[in-house]
Length: 388
Image 1 (cartoon, rainbow, N blue to C red):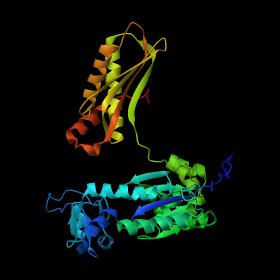
Image 2 (cartoon, one colour; image 1 turned 135 degrees about the horizontal axis):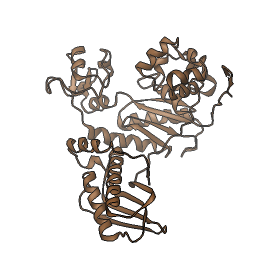
Image 3 (cartoon, helix red, strand yellow; image 1 turned 135 degrees about the vertical axis):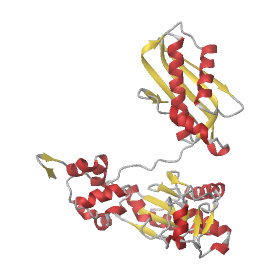
Image 4 (cartoon, rainbow, N blue to C red; image 1 turned 180 degrees about the vertical axis):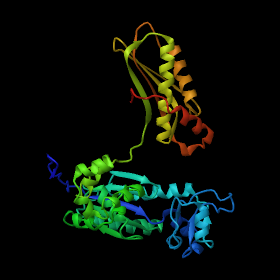
């Protein structure tokens, strides 16, 4: 295609994969209805009743009966109450939801280990090669739906296609309990007819701007030059140019158990003084703890890594009975290891801090003020620190 004097080669689709997107139907509300059948057919809202907490709080999800009143997730609980005063507010049991989510994941694993959870209630599955050697992704999606219902008494919707973008669009097309298949030969027509606000990742502000540019559905988007889209929407413009053509090469990133979290820094000039070491360990500890928080982990073992200017590498670890609580504690532990085991007789080229012996933060409630304090510390410079 041409835009001005530039000529671009039209990108090509990879249609070799088979991707399923599973989305549980009103998951939290459905679990509560399963646990309490008297709620069936009623407008169930997963949130604390606004009369109990001064009108604060937001809706986690709502039953389909409640959605008829315009109630949706992320809406304020007060607004939900105004829309549906007769709604049944349930605070929610997130330990139960997490437990059921693990049961759902176990069903997925009967078919593939390539599973990418997006939340407790949805996930991508790459079943191009699967454990039961079934060639039909549609049949696998149907079996997953049936097994989830038979074993857990919950329903889900499924989208089936050759990439993640299309599979996610498809799963939302026939809810609840639906299954939508978008084969390669139908993808272009499906995308061209789709309203632009239905494109995954396009927010309200982007929709307004697109309408100003005359983009109301996929067909309008398809006819816009790539450079024009990039000019108005930056990287998203490049992404949308490809997606409206049915192109999404992102892979299903399987949910691997993280065994350690760490950061390290290589220095252009060797560290020669205690002051330089202390300053660097403080920075690395801040970044390591921020990475732990991002991954929702905490651990009991700290590993200090030192590489000297002769390229010899030294590591020492200490294990504690309790979880490391904040970046200050992590820094102090790393500094003590250095003071006990490290040396400044040779220049230091690299320092690293890793935390292992990890558990999920769900194993212990961390007070909110700790995170507020840490968020302030996370803003420090991290331009030349790399993840181990």
